[in-house]
Length: 578
Ligand SMILES: CCCCCCCCCCCCC/C=C/[C@@H](O)[C@H](COP(=O)(O)O)NC(=O)CCCCCCCCCCCCCCC
Ligand SMILES: Nc1ncnc2c1ncn2[C@@H]1O[C@H](COP(=O)(O)OP(=O)(O)O)[C@@H](O)[C@H]1O
Ligand SMILES: [Ca+2]
Image (cartoon, rainbow, N blue to C red; front, side, top):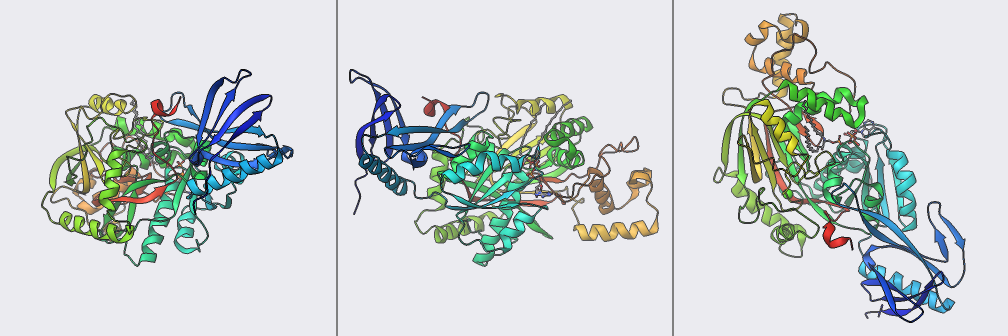
């Protein structure tokens, strides 16, 4: 039987009288003056109530000021325009009502609680929280304990907190440990930490479904646990692009109210390496080199990317390659259609219907995606582009971040089952600078003659014919054999280099750009180690959401809506701030 949640009465806030109305979906209060004239109304969707308590309650520090039996306090989401930022900041609002009687107070609290239960059913009750204490400016622990934990407590959420002691601890935990009882996972850190958690969650889900995630042809099972991101890293692009601001309180509030934002994920495959996943950036050339260089300057914190960016820009490199891609349906959307994926995006909603046409989600996803990908596997529809590129970038979403408020691809969608492939050909250095600089403004970075962008479902990057990549093991053993035969000269880049085998050259090139697995922050030889290092390497590495991939040739495939975040996409400022 449906309970009637509607309630209306006079309430007092201090000495002012208010008309309060609970309609079921909304709770609103309007000040009424002495002449019974109604003044400004505040209306809060029930789904955006954070919590309510009997009595007069303060949080931060949390204390019950006075436990009178006619009062109750309501905490709710309050929006404010975020100044320079792109989305809306959420803060918690607090209002303390007094009732005419204790019976009326109890009626209000029970009705509001019932409305919350009915209209906000997907709120988390128990969360698993991972904090990377070394991410960004190393403030993760402080941010969580001072800003986030008190809000979780107020909302009645219990959390199990793990402060990581090593890279990949969170991933391994998610792959192996018992996760029953948790409604979601919270990541306190940057994009690298998010990536670790995403790898753990996707891996765990496939394990449980008995699927081999390394197989490019397998349709992956969407993850059922949501991920919340409390930004405490260097770029924090996944948070910025899905929430609109990098603000711990805003993110905590999205988690508390159980918001849900599906996210496309790209799997990156290499025949001899485990699959890697990316949501924000799979970048070869410029972004790969920037990442490799930046790992040596971690001590600089987030600034390391700007410093390394300038260094790599000055090295002015380009790399030969062949890119194959499978275009997405151009009738649905285009990377140059000047639209933005905003909260409630219709392109993404239509994709949800396309990806999950029936209510039994897992079955329908499986059959749809299998048939889609079978046709992808044939060469029909694939397009190829060969040349020398300054960078080849792929992103499943806009990848907006404070450095680039509109992102790598401003019109990309968070959850449409496609990604944007951006090819920047070798060009004059000033042209490339113009391209980079346009990321910081609203000028179109694709409106340049050496840049092309394609909305795709899958892509492949290969080295030019005759220069294909051997497996890394082959290269390593070959290089070791060569080393046995001759002492390696200083920095490995003397005139003899040119006569070495292609694989040895590639291995040396990787060492030069500084390939090493993420998490090993020991300092290595720099990209610019001295005057002998004048020769440009023939290959770059991939930047996979901030992790270096140790190979050049990859195949990528977008998995529509594979993970879900506690977020709702970017809110339209004009529509939300009144
Ligand atoms: C002239 C100004 C140019 C500004 C160019 C801005 C481009 C910004 C693109 C940002 C894309 C972000 C995609 C997200 C990647 C993250 O997953 C990933 C990991 O993040 P985490 O450390 O938080 O874990 N982050 C990254 O790989 C960082 C990429 C950032 C690249 C910044 C490049 C700055 C370039 C500056 C060039 C300056 C040229 C000066 C010439 C004298
Ligand atoms: N305790 C730890 N020690 C060292 N590395 C860690 C630890 N916890 C997580 N990591 C790794 O640190 C990397 C960077 O973390 P992230 O939070 O993204 O910071 P940033 O944005 O500054 O790069 C991630 O790839 C993650 O795997
Ligand atoms: Ca997408």
